Image 1 (cartoon, rainbow, N blue to C red):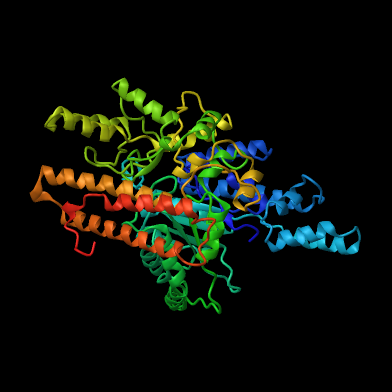
Image 2 (image 1 turned 180 degrees about the vertical axis):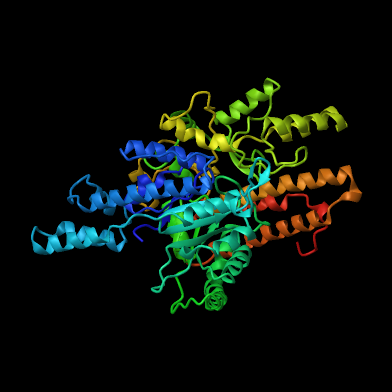
Length: 608
């Protein structure tokens, strides 16, 4: 691998064509394939941009969703193949693509070292031989795709259910499986047994006679237990997890799947301590399943472990690789400020660069009912408030990817839609007990916002392909770490920052990723506890013991996490670049905050 980082999926459109911009330099990235309409429009745009023939795939065509995704991914593969062929034919000179390929790499990379040695060689046969070797070593960064397991709407035609193989997630999987890409599918947002079972149908996910996988599986997980449970389910089907991609529950962008108080450091430590055990246990299950399918594999495939969420400095990047034995890290939100890599329209880009910490917050805006990282200065947020002021809350629902609610309808509708919010507010008004309670309940309904359109608008604006009457309102979901980056950056600047060649955060007062995550979890726990206590006051008899147990466990895990970090930074070999005096002081201030929380209602044990 020429790089020790990847660019994770960023919303729907923000990284939809990121591979076209960074794969030629060996940088892996992830494309969302949730929205086939977006894929189709981007295929048209890039086909025309590159003077390639384009034939529209209409939604009325049989299996159109899968076919659109396949066609777009094949175009990405074709264009990037051409980019790599072009780079290999270029001269090694200042500013050329092939020189840039090696110069973007970390100084400790074997390829970068070989490149540096080549530059010092005099002209002649030995230098020509080294140049030839370097050209052969040029490979594209992986063009991976992301599927949100829980975004799996059932589809209908003329009121007739089209069947389980035509749900959104399964059709997207089929689109990837049928493509020419040799890369990985990142499965995120929980467990979907139907999706896991469907994977068995595609030969690409099984090894060939040499042990090579055309299609790999990456599981995005939040803790060790969920990784083990999901990977075992797949292993029993003869499917190997090539990478566990661990993401901070709250210190990340997009949807925030909070763990039960488990913090990133202890989670990574558990993976490190159990890595061999996990791999061996899965290997035993996997080989038994392969034998049932008459597939025989001599050697155990590679299984990587990576992490992402809130990483902001080269010191943190290196600390994760070295202290926890990770294979790579993920850098997401900072790349939203890199125009060469992602799709952010000019107005949103300006607002992001000028934003402060208070502009980034965890909201209940997602129709999925999962906490969602939001940006106060987004034009979608402004539009939402404007619609409420006009007594027209909710959005037109055209794409229907997040339709899950059946309170008022037979077929599911979206909780961000104008239809649902009108019906729900009418119901609330009929039963609300006080003006305060009425406002509270209505605000909870109207906080939901359309993500299907909002998370695509930015690329349509940037590439000037917005359709007439199409909304210009942009939703964006960066992680809180973006608050510390305050300008637009070039690709070289950001990559150099990751590898410690420059410091884009020089002089910035920023908590390290572990301290920041702890603070986010404390705030989250306080809100959950407040909701619990409010319910307690309202109706003691209906107090949920399950919720009480959950919060008690959450609190205890926060305390365990604090003790883990204390032991970590008190060691003689503490990484002072990450755990210096200032960071320890910030950490202890956050830890004091935990003990100040009134947890009397949880009936916690004496040891706590």
